[in-house]
Amino acid sequence: MKQIVVGVGNPILGDDAVGLEVVRRLKGKINAEIKETMTSGFGLLEEILGYDKAMIVDALVTNDKKEVGKVKKFIIKELDSNSLKTPHALSFLDAIGIAKRSGIKEIPKKIVVVGILVNEIDFKERISEEVKKAIPRAVKVVEGEINGF
Image (cartoon, rainbow, N blue to C red; front, top):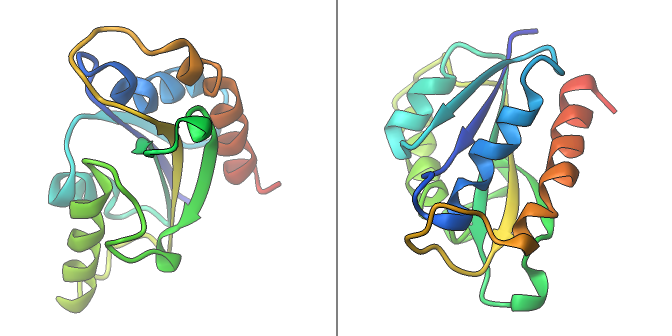
């Protein structure tokens, strides 16, 4: 099975970089291709075409400060464009819908989103302590999904 894990984020937008940090910690630990990207929508869709299984690791914005640092896992078929509040996933979900309606066959059969809940995205080059604590948990979630447990 051909698998890919894509970390999404921007290193100068604070907690938005958490997806990038998670995949950096996965390098050499899992049997999947690993990529980092700052793109969303069709650009992100293009990164995963041709794989059997794709995992997207990204920051998900929550308004509930008690939720910050939690790790959530979703399977794309369970989502609609109102399910996630992230600057990346909404247009990505729309891109998947358009690709499916257009008959593109290279879309992975299984797409999983691992989201780390964050409260704010702003200009700074470090991840908050609350969100940093979630990185090891997110790594374990990805490892479990890739390794099938």
